[in-house]
Amino acid sequence: MILDLFKLDGRAALVTGASRGIGQALAYGLAQAGADIACVTRSGEAGETRRLVESCGRRFVDLKADLGKPEERTGLAQKVVDELGRLDILVNNAGVTHRHLPEEYPIEEWRYLLEVHLHAAFELAVQAAEFMAERGRGKIINIGSLMCYEAGLNVSAYAAAKHALAGLTKSLAVSWAPRGINVNCIAPGYIETELSGVLQDDPVRGPQILERIPLGRWAQPDELAGLCVYLASDACSYMHGSVIPIDGGWLSR
Image 1 (cartoon, rainbow, N blue to C red):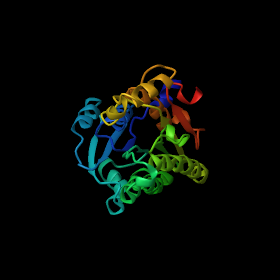
Image 2 (image 1 turned 90 degrees about the vertical axis):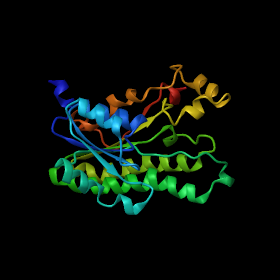
Image 3 (image 1 turned 45 degrees about the horizontal axis):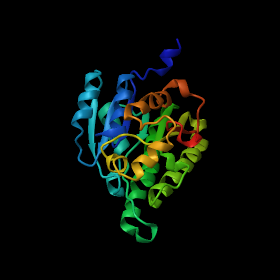
Image 4 (image 1 turned 135 degrees about the horizontal axis):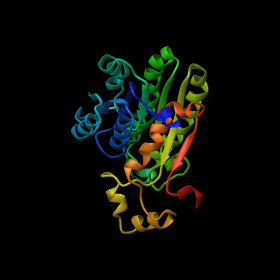
């Protein structure tokens, strides 16, 4: 049956930045499809995500790490395997956003943002691939952005990181497809989250953004979950290196 291909029963997923917003919605979606969930946050606490995952009858593990600090990324995949017995799915979702004029961008903020969005995604993918290759299968899902394609406004580090993440996705896919590891990227448009409220409520930028979205509204985080489940499942066995927009028609306009 076709729907059986989407089931994730018995699999384990590591989702970074899953305490709220997009990461929480993706973790919950994967849990509903049958996966156990490990969550990485800076606080090491994701109480509401735990409640959602456990409501599905799935196991949940909290892991504490600041992904902007290389020393705190060491051994995270091994910790998931130690706690859940396996690692089948990695979702590189954690992110931060800084907005500055390029000539005023603090270099330490630039470096930290690239550590979180790009360096951590690469390092965790390499960690996860070691376990996935042993099984001859695995799914790595990077969470990009419209900034995989566009420049944005005064978000030079974010745009640079997301363009690079799209390239990393393709490069890893070429290297690891023969080993049974699918690497793909979701490129969300404008999503309603706690962190996006400042931009959405901006009296100038808010209406400008809304006017350009053909669908006429921002997305809800759970509208990304179906695509994430697909990319984590056996249904996407032939998809490697894709960067998939989900943007209400933004890029088509």
